Picture: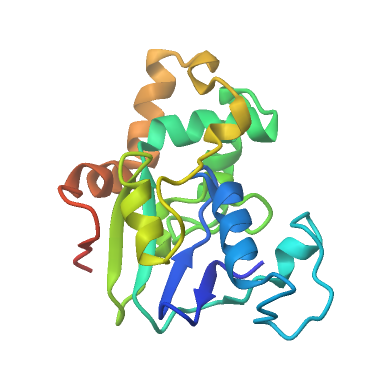
Length: 197
């Protein structure tokens, strides 16, 4: 699936990042811009959002418009990813480290499981990258997309991410793996702040 959702009406793209309320966002974008009444994508009979119709949302590989990136605390996002993918923290860290070793330090993309993809990989040169802390700035982010606020956010499908145990050694590994994401998250002082890349 292409990593950016393009919304022509607002002139924005949204980075399609798992673990930041993405399903709630898909559903809201789909219902507002892709329903049968507005027929934005040219379909006459669009069904309610599911795994098939979710793919009807227009996506691009490289955004040309200002791009909204919701950035979550990387450790909490990792925990949500473990819950969603049904992996233990050890299994997930081992798979990330193996992939990083295979790519020998190159930027790594998790084509098969983007849940563990570093958010900094979504920053795009040449466009405004608008940063919002998740979930703190969700209403400001969806306002840019002209979606209704307050936004009805289904946090992690109701899963309690804090229940994913991490040893101190694993926390240290995650701080190293996601060091750039941690710096990015900490750098966000105001909703919609532009990333400097």
